[in-house]
Structure formats: structure tokens, C-alpha cells
Length: 331
Ligand code: TXA
Ligand code: MG
Image (cartoon, rainbow, N blue to C red):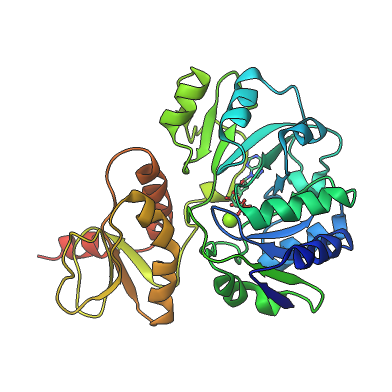
């Protein structure tokens, strides 16, 4: 595996060629780093699943460079989805649409829908353009982490996650830190009205004002499968506890105006929701690098991006004993 730091146009061209040859290329997007494969190459896509250790029935998002390519991958696109695409692409939004024949089972996890996204990041867009220039139709890319772990927001985090699972021909494009820091909003557009399967930087309020529809959030009735909807996901090795109850030696993550409790290790001090999202995963990773057992996190309140941050934090914390509850049980 080779790393191209601040890749030149020529290196991005080489990466596009490598993708077309069936190799894997990890690349930056504005949300998190993705692990890319040619979306019509079954062998390359199966290598993505094995590098991630991801169950094969969890579908991948196909990344394209322009709205013109949407019709290749999706059919019966509702008007409200077209509105969303025109309004928010390139951007941190994935649309789930009825799939065309091009979208084969090995991409969709056997489902009849396909996830599509145009990322808003220069390296990613150039890579996709070069790839399409070589006859490519789309790049399948899940977040470039092992299954269940935290998405990487830097190239070095990709290396930590995946270097032992990538081959000598595979590449990592290092485009610096991701601007947004949490994964794209996933919007199921296979129903009469939009359903948010994963909240992100394109907020419920933004979707409602672009489409004129009320938006359902993480509908339990949804029959689609998103691994981001599993109870425990986006989790560091440390136990994440929400609230303010700390013990000496804990990691601590909260807004800058909340003082660091005595004896804890401050992992980040974001000043607003945008900064919070941007540093969230690197702060949790730092806790693991320090070998901390617990990380106590004070969540942001409110709507918009705060909802996406809380969603990830709840998943990082769930399925594990919450110290607060455990302590509250004691006399
Ligand atoms: O921001 C992002 O979306 C990043 C960057 C790399 O684009 N990608 C990403 O991919 O987060 P991934 O695979 O880690 O998460 C995508 C989620 C998964 O939970 C997957 O199951 C779900 O989207 N998904 C993909 N296709 C779907 C479909 N047809 N129906 C329902 N869920 C789908
Ligand atoms: Mg993921």
C-alpha cells in the first residue's frame, strides 16, 4: 500500500487508473475517508468487504461526479429526490433510490435500492472525474474503517485501521483532515416522502425546506438496512459514557466553555457544533491511543448537526454499561 500526500493531478490520475485496474483507493471526502473500489467490479468490491470485515449484506454507497450519472444507477427517481440532489450535491448527503440493472447484488447487499452520493471535496471529485474519464461508472466507498469502528477523518487514521488489510497495489490519498467529520446524511427516497436513515450535516430542517415534505427520522418501519443503524457502531475501544460524571483518569470531551474535571484527560474542546463534528472521531481515537478505559462526553443540544453528533455518540456509547446508571444503583 502506498500513500500519496497532497496528491498531484498526476497522482490522482494514477489512482483512478489503479481503481479501474481493480485495486482499492482510500480517499478523502468532506465527511470521512472512504475506501473506494470500482462499483461494477465484483472482485474489487469483495476486497472492500474483506478489508473492512463487513458483512456482505450491508450495501455500499456509490460515489459519482455529477447529477447526470444519477440516471445510470437509479430508476423511478421521485421529484423530491431530484430537488435534494440539485440543492445539496456535491455535498454530505446520500440518496437511497430504486436501483437500475447496473447496480448489482454485490453492491446493494441484495436489496432493490442503491445509495448514491456526490462528495464535495476536491481530491474526491478529481478522482471521480478521472475515473469516469477512463470509462468508470461509479466508485463504491464505505467509510475506510474496520466494521463497527470509528470512521477515519485523516489519512493516518485510515492507515491505523486498514494498513494490514490492504495489498501492495492499493493506495491511500491523503487530502488532509475532513471538513465535516461525520458521515453523510442518508435519505431514503424510495417512499412517498423522505425518510432520514442517518442524520448528518444536511439536516432534517434543510431537507424539509428543500422538499416541502415533513421528514421521518430513522423510521423503524423502514425495511432497508444501514449498518449505521445497528445499536453499537462508530465505537472506540474505550467505554463511552454520556453525561458529566467523571473519575480521575477518564477522557473528557465537551464544549470549550465546560471546564475539565480534575484528573481527567481533555480530548477536545470544540467551540460550536461544526467544530464538534470535525473533532469528534479524532478525539475518540486519541482516547484509544492514550489507552484510556473510559471517555466521558458532554453532548451538544439542539437540532441540525447536533442531532448527527448525538446519533453517533449514542451509538458509540450503546451496548456497554453506563457508569452513571451503575453508580446510581449503589446505595
Ligand atoms: O459520508 C459518507 O457517507 C461516507 C463517505 C465515504 O462517503 N461513507 C459511508 O459509507 O459512511 P458506509 O458504508 O460506512 O455507510 C453507509 C451506510 C451503511 O450503513 C449502509 O448500510 C447504508 O449506508 N446504505 C448503503 N446503501 C444503502 C441502501 N441501499 N439502503 C439502505 N442503507 C444503505
Ligand atoms: Mg461506515
